[in-house]
Length: 312
Image (tube, rainbow, N blue to C red; front, side, top):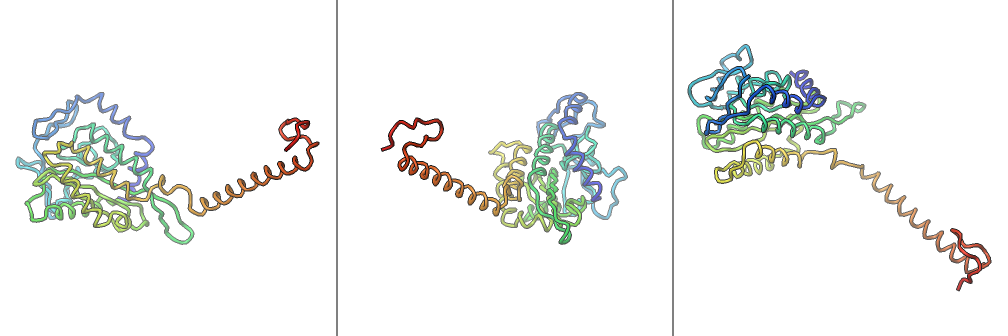
């Protein structure tokens, strides 16, 4: 599983998502909405499905295709449903990512996003992986930086409605983080899952493995959950994809970043000292030249100046 995730990240970095999205847009018609938030796949997809699936219990084995069962009732996510929820890294088509050989981590089996919104999320994940990195040290001689691995998963609802549906969704996201094998091997667990459910209350939660949890703290996770409820409230009218990108930006802001890490502090101090020393030397040279001209006015002035002009 770790090798599979690693291959997915490498392919996403090298190939990008835009070329695959372009090819897919040529073969598929634009997405159509049924007016209830379900997005139907255009011609060229294997099936048309407007009814979300039921994610099966852990006691039931995974389907051979790695997919999920279809039922005539609403899709429901439970804490144990992660066993039947598809993986974007191994079965992107089951995550509504048709046309991609590898996905960067977006899974939307209930078709809550348009293709364009899902592609935009993929690009956002790629961008974060190139900037949000941390130091991974296997031993004293093997120290290097590695990107955080982030997945975005979406489902129709949390079932049954609980007193704290966010806690149930967090459990679901945590199970998926481990099941997907998110993170770099030997780096202490740097995988993160951002999970969204539309019912009973539209919201998103984040679950992080131990290394990532140093930055995705419980306090931050609570703030993100509260913000998601405001973003996805009916009165806000924020598209799901746009809201999730906003939350990803918030996550990226608290993760250690190559851009923010910049030049080491010690190097800044050394460069500042050398710059100040250079300024002092230049000032000293200028003052010295002025003093010499006043003392010996017959000498030529620097920079081609005239020596016949008396120095006062």
